[in-house]
Length: 139
Image (cartoon, rainbow, N blue to C red; front, side):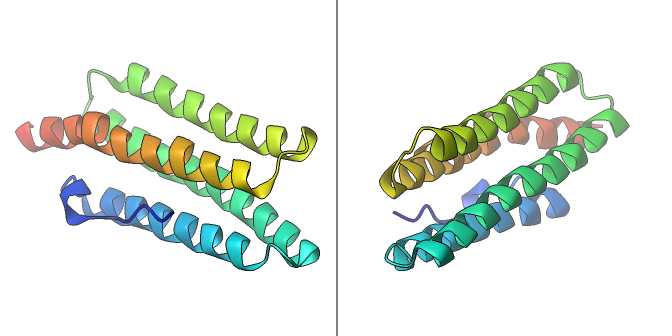
């Protein structure tokens, strides 16, 4: 169930690497709590609300930090990268609204967090964020 952070995901920009690690750590923590609290509806609901708050708030903060860095170095793919971030925040919101409004079960949520969010982030770091790091290092 857990998707672990590995050092090969480091892009060499400490603040961004720390934020990436924190997203993995917190997401896995919430997935564990959701599994543990499945028989306690009140606690489960509270943890799911906390999870969605963390995901939206932390990703927005993280993406803003990344985008400021891109602007600082005049990253040529800034607009494209910003759009990818925007679309991802929309996807998190879709997962949240779908879960609350379409009566999905906990397995749906765990799948979405793991396969839609953490797998997406891992892929995004490898394919997109590394390009930013390489560009900055060349400047």
